[in-house]
Length: 153
Image (cartoon, rainbow, N blue to C red; front, side):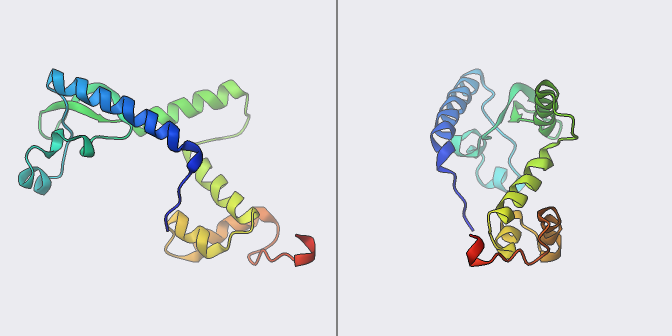
């Protein structure tokens, strides 16, 4: 299943343009490579410098890869997003425990509230068993069926 958001398409294009400029600057400085799995590295030795393999969300700094010893720009570390979210929650005065996974729960809950069927939500979340997805139905106070009368729509 493919889900696209038209609302961020332009912003993403702008972001990728700035990342491409950063990559070109890194190439000029001799750093513009990324780690590729061994088989790809061996088969395509120059691919690690190609734009297509670069990270969409690159790190703000250059670092030495402990596996290869090469110096290059890695992806943004997940802890960077976690720290930024924690700071934003604190600044917003939200008195609840919020983490990155909260957005996943919110997404699933809102889909179900808006009448999407449980199998669609299961597929979007990548759950193998629908029982895992059914957990989200408890917050709806409508049970697992979530059936609404056409008269109530």
